[in-house]
Each structure stands twice: as C-alpha cells, then as structure tokens.
Length: 91
Length: 478
Ligand SMILES: Cc1cc2nc3c(=O)[nH]c(=O)nc-3n(C[C@H](O)[C@H](O)[C@H](O)COP(=O)(O)OP(=O)(O)OC[C@H]3O[C@@H](n4cnc5c(N)ncnc54)[C@H](O)[C@@H]3O)c2cc1C
Image 1: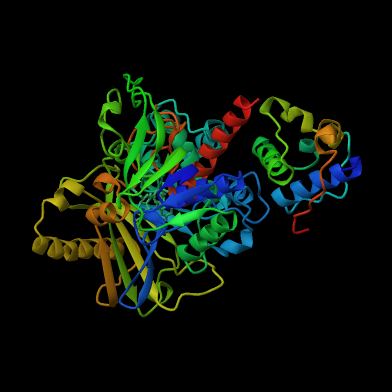
Image 2 (image 1 turned 180 degrees about the horizontal axis):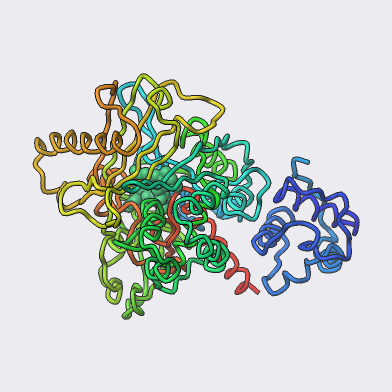
C-alpha cells in the first residue's frame, strides 16, 4: 500500500465504525478525536479491523501512534507495505 | 471442537457480547438452554396472539446520531443502524402517589415544570441533582456502596419527593430491597428521566432478529436447546479472595446432552448464583455469601378490543404507590398490590400501530409464597392476583375490568422456569460484580449480575466486558 492508500484504508475503517461522520475534510496532522467523535472504544475497533483486514497487530501501548492520520501513515507504513487495500464501508 | 469463546445464554447481554467477540474475529458460540432467544426479554405466542415477555419500555431513548449516549454507543459498537430498531417515542409517563403526580417524558422540560408545580421549594435542589448526577455515572460499573435514599434525603427537604424519584427507578432496576446504590441510581436516572422511553415497532422480536442476524453475519454460532450442565475448570482450587471462586482455569463446558465443548474463555449471563452452581464444588470455597436476588415480580397482561385511548388513557407508564412511603421489598404475601407499574404499548408513536389494546401491570411478588402453593391453588391465586392488578390499574390509570378479551399472567415461578434466574430474581443478586471477574481465569460474568440491567443495560454489559478483556489481551500480547 502507498501512503495515500493507507489513508484511504483508515478512512474506510472509520466509515465502517462511524457511518454518519463526514470524513472528506479530515486533516492529516490534527488528532482524529478532535475532528470527529471517536472514543477509546472506537480505537479498539480500528485496531480490530486492521487485524481482521490486514493481519496487522497493534499492541495497546502503540494506540497513541494512531492518533492522527500522519501518525497512522508513519506507524502502519512498514506494516502495510506489502498488503492490498481492501475497502468495506457502505459509503 | 475448540472455541475461542463460549457464551452461556442468548439474552441481550449474551447477544451483545457475542456480536463483539465475532467482530474481534473470535470463533464463538452462544449456548442457550431454551428453544427461543431473548432471555428475560423474549417473546411468545398464546391464544393466537404474539406477546413480549418483558417489554414495557426501551429505556435510554436517544434520537439518531447521538453517539455518546448509551443507546448510540451500543448501536455503533454493534454496527446496527438506528433505523433498524424503528423506535417510537412514548407519549408521557408519571409517578403517582395519593393526591400527587409527577409527569415526565423524553423531554426533561416536562419533569422540570412538574417539579416546579408540585415541589416548588425543591427546584434548586433538583437542579443541583441534575448537575451532579452525571459525575456519578460509572460506566465501569464500580460502586461506592452509598445509599441513594440517604443521598437524596440529604438533598431534598420533602421526603415525598425522595420516594417519588426512587419508585420508578427501583422498578426498572433495583436489585436490593428498600434502596438503590448511588451510582446505579445515577445510571437509572439517566435511563428513565433524562433519556426516557421508546418502543421498537413490532416489539422486542424485531430487535432480537436484528441482533441474531448481526451475530450470524459476523460468523457467530447460535445453539438453542443447548443448556450448559457444567463448567469445566482445571488446576488449583486454592481459597479465592473475598467473593471469588478459587483459582483455576476454564477449559470449556459440558452440555446437558453430555457433549463437551472446549473453549479459551467462557462468558456467563446465567447470573452469579446460577453460574456458581455450574462450577466444580472445590472452586466454591471463598465464593462469599451465595444469596439469590430477593426481588421478583408478578405480571398481568390484559388484551382489550378497544385501545387505551378509547378507554380514557393516553399515557405510557404509571409508577404508582398508595401511600407517602414507598416500600420496595419482597412482600409478606403472594403479591403487594400497594405499588407497581401500569403500562401499555399502545401509546408509543411507532410506525406500525397496534390493533388491540394491551395493559400490563407489574406487582412485587414473593417467590417463596408462590412456590408454596399446590397446583390448584396456584391457578386460582394467579387469577386473584390479576384482579388486584386490574383494580390498581383502575385506581391509578384506567379501568379494563369486564373488557378483557384475553388475559395472561406470570409469576416468579414462571420467570424462574423460563430464564433460570433462581427465585425469579429479574434484577439478579444484590451484590454485583462490575469487572465481570469470577476468580477463575477465563470465566467472566456478563449481564444482570455484572451490574447493568434492562435491555440497553444488558447489551452494554456484554459489550463492555468483552471490550475490556480484549483491551487487556491487546496489552499483554505485546
Ligand atoms: C416482566 C419483565 C419486564 C421487563 N421490562 C423491561 C423493560 O420494559 N425494559 C427494560 O429495559 N428491561 C426490562 N426488563 C429487564 C430486562 O429484560 C433484563 O434486565 C435483561 O433482558 C437481562 O438480560 P441478560 O442477558 O442479563 O439476562 P437474561 O435475559 O436472563 O439471559 C440469560 C439467558 O441465559 C440462559 N441460561 C441460563 N442458564 C443457562 C444454562 N445453564 N445453559 C444455557 N443457557 C442458560 C437463559 O435461558 C437466558 O436466556 C424486564 C424484565 C421482566 C422479567
């Protein structure tokens, strides 16, 4: 996956978890929780989907790395490099 | 056959937990003793009609999009669309004591104006209560053991207001006599007074269908007529900590058919006492006072050709008490007709209107007294208790006497028989286990005896216990 595809992958997962959020204008460098309503349980769901879709494990102490989209790209880049993008949201 | 997780019971907590586990990619099965799912909130057919066994009101109503409220959180976590529940809001409900009424609806403005009208001297104290309560809502279920009655008595000068606030909240979630704990009071206050009541169009059945469909779509397996006879535990049975089972690790379960199922983790919604009874004896040392819950109910259902509106009643639920003091305890006789809940599904704004009238009346009832009756007396006493229930309804809401075209009743024995809850204790044991832990590794408690009750509460309980465990697993996997 390219960096752009990683952003797409994360947005698609968020769209599955929170179908009524508008994700078009998400900023890369601002914490996701400040832009849309996500609580700690939602992060658990993001991690759960990453594991289900891409077989990627994210231990709990690394959850903070996923706070922004930039953070997601940086942290997940190496882990997703050889994975195919899978889109599943109804959006 | 080896599972990642087995769930005992296909009630709302079991279904909530099951969906979450399946979403986490676990190989999971729900094992239900009965032929139907839903547990305390199931459905049945009688005399050609469909009935819900335990649906008065879905509490915690929140409109679409309110994602931080309990209902919104549940729907989001289970990935169920708000529209799938097809909720219709209540008209209004009320607490009625002799000569005084407090109405409330899903709009807090109504209750505020009622307090100002009926208890003008308490307005400031009520506002303070509204401001303070959210700070006591503990989603992790923890509990300081403070008495809600004592706390409210310190805040209000008029004891009548204290009783009137306690009455509906005890009926919709009080597991112990006379009182509620303060943190559960805060949660129930939100459920009933701040968020209020709704009814899924078509009753509980479509909601259960949505949950079961979701569970199966995520890959879960639902096994009916699969009563668990024993929980298999291996390893040490040292003395457990206070109210804990002696250590050891769960290996799986044995079904009533004799079939053995292995599992990494077992979640039980059967109740604390009931779950203990499934565990090996040597693990019970240290399990603390093993008392079933003290409270159960009698319920009468009366079908009329005319709808309640035509009989002069346009409200939803009436919580009544016939004296200034509310006595929430197991009665000295079969039922206690002095207080109760009167409600009808007809006056919700659901998309699919009902064709007949239905009146439900709930009274406190004593399991021990009902159990002592021989079969003949039992039938006669059911009819007598139903008369008391309808007399109370006539006095506090509306009169259907002489207009019934069909009637059904159930007692603490019925509840015990169909849900396995010892003593017919609808709200379970007076001692809750907020973290769901039992002392045995790999055995968790969900539902009623974890602490959250009601439809929304039970779902939340199943979801929360699973989430917490998955978080712990994520923490230790690294
Ligand atoms: C008359 C009545 C009216 C109610 N009205 C409302 C209402 O209007 N609104 C509201 O929110 N709540 C209401 N409730 C409360 C609500 O129904 C319960 O709090 C909720 O359904 C509890 O869910 P649960 O999953 O914790 O437990 P349960 O529903 O009791 O589920 C436990 C399940 O486990 C199964 N089981 C037990 N032992 C075994 C075993 N050994 N092997 C296999 N399976 C087993 C049982 O058969 C049952 O299906 C009402 C309850 C009653 C009885």
